[in-house]
Length: 346
Ligand code: NDP
Ligand code: GDR
Image 1: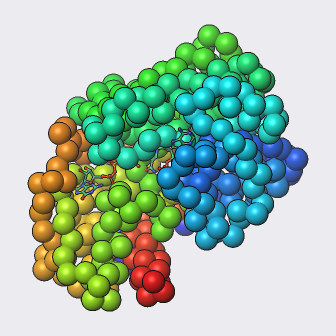
Image 2: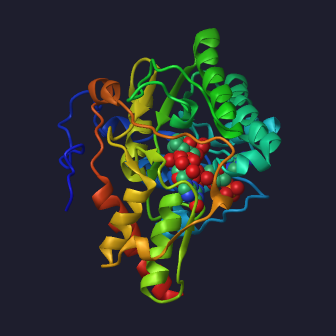
């Protein structure tokens, strides 16, 4: 295994992490419950004894396969609603009567945000404001989590980004996330909501959508290995990201809402790698050399790129007692193995 010095496999001892018993009878409402993070978070909260409600859109494109694969679909109470429809969110709040709301729903694919900028602004930006309003109307005592993003940093001027790094968003997605981020801060300051933003850096898993680069690569590696595909077409392989494991990151979300005071936290591994390096790891896991299969295709270049991101999560470590437990050399093989299994069963 390569160097994994930035992660901490052993769980931290209790520290500022409140015990599990406190959460026994809590109720949580998760928007975007059927997405990657929603599924891991729902699993975590169920483990902790929560009653979990998930907002389900009628027009959703993604389906419920992740929750089904995880074996938890039957344990989640689905509530109809859409971030675009404030009244549906108020009703969802009334139905779920949650202690905690995790707003994970979004149009989350950066590349699509240039083709559907208005929809992205409406869902990812104004949609979060709708959720905040629903909380404010239905129960302002609720604890609220907003899924902010390292994409808000964008064209960074610093080697590492923390909570004080200035934002310079580079896509309609990032601009929309910045709106929802500042709205959450504003509702905290204006109305005293217990509202926290997690500024999460990229996090991946076998449940990642295939349009995102890690999963696109691990899926292609499986297909190439099983001789169902001959090449992999990518855009800018020199872009660098700080990649972590979604299963680790949802723990940070939960920890934020267990604190006495709401706040904003960067969540990251502190290590950055290029798309090229990530490809090398993925192909090497099945004994192949990525150079033989990689085709650079300008169709996947973005109108404005975020060249490099690397997070500094020291505040999350100090205040929340959170640390990543999975490094890239574990994460990518885990994803390749899952895709090999899936492609074999197709
Ligand atoms: P996904 O794209 O996997 O999940 C997003 C979910 O939002 C989907 O279940 C989708 O449902 C739902 N959704 C979309 N539009 C609406 C709508 N109008 N009303 C209600 N639900 C809707 O994202 P992730 O799980 O990867 O990410 C979770 C959140 O964290 C997102 O807000 C993302 O922007 C943010 N984030 C993610 C990071 C990452 O690396 N994964 C990093 C930083 C932030 P459907 O598919 O049915 O349309
Ligand atoms: P990102 O993730 O834009 O960082 O947003 P993505 O995996 O899409 O791209 C990462 C980097 O890889 C480069 N790249 C390619 N990307 C894709 N998708 N497809 C390709 O073929 C390709 N070739 C190169 C991209 O240009 C980019 O530099 C993710 C999402 O989960 C957001 O919702 C979240 O907020 C951020 O992470 C943090």
